[in-house]
Length: 473
Ligand SMILES: [Zn+2]
Image 1 (cartoon, rainbow, N blue to C red):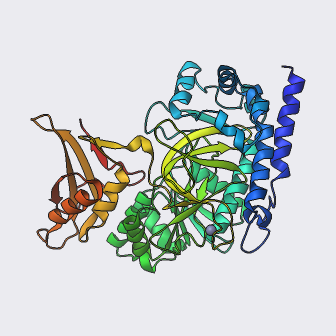
Image 2: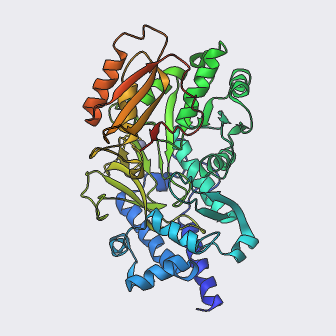
Image 3: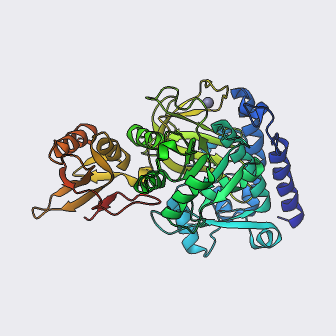
């Protein structure tokens, strides 16, 4: 293909994204950043998705060797995929396929539409997948992506209730992870003042909350818990602090009832969250709106459907599940110059509800939010469970501390066994805690676990992402 044709395809893709980007510089109304897009009907959303799919497939074919090889291998050409209905022709892409490409084509892989020429002309930042499994994959983004991210995140953060009168305290290490950076650029777009909280310890951060009175705390859920306890240890009451919103990302939180309750009680603040991944977007895919916790038993998160196509597929064979059924998340990203993706398996279990939300948005909602990645599945003697189920179980027991760990080992008989190690919270340690934890794990995960009740402050304190399951088999 000629450079001229490639340039025309790129220009058409950029024009298509721009044509559907409303209210780039400020909110269109008090309730909605982009009223026409946020309250669009399902038919309007579908028309936008189709226009973007039609423009993105030739762009991917011409700019990503990974995509070109896949089209050729499937015997497809870009014009075979012109609409949401056509997507099913394209088998789901999973991380392992990207990892193989990254290993074969170091250091950047070829799954991105960013080449070295574009990187030198308008490169913005390089991020890395969190890589809890396998090799880390890098993603380079352009200055156009910066604009697209900050606008998309501003729409989501406006829906959470963040306004220019807020001051946000971002407790992040500012490493090559998308969450904090995407939020930081959106804060600037929203005219919300920020306090960057990188490179300081928790004592210093507790002092900042106390002295400078930020209203929004932005961090992982594990860190929000940790910082609240540090404040208490300093004699400062997080409940009485200026924090009104706990804005978390990076780990499942709002869908875990007992964790959400613990955080909201500790800080006397509302918990809101972002959901997404480095590969597809990478601005927020999902976010909490004002109605996300109207029914505390059924937390919801919206997905940004004018910017992405979200589907749920079965864990075997990755075929689409029926409406309302549980499945794994798959994202077709239609909002990036450098990382558009077709049917990337993000891989969290949830159910979708396409009915309109009380907030006025028609974008699909994930019921129960997101409950952890399928990669994290634990298999104990044939019984399968997710870390999030164990967290639900442990957090259901009153009188225990914030830290816990689950250790899985093989005993001398060759049997795999699970031990839950929890701390009592200072009260009478014998008051049935071990039995309660055992019972909760048994009823929620259908496995027998032994339980050790430890003295407070025995377990290592979790700061950023918690790794609470130690599989020593
Ligand atoms: Zn809503």
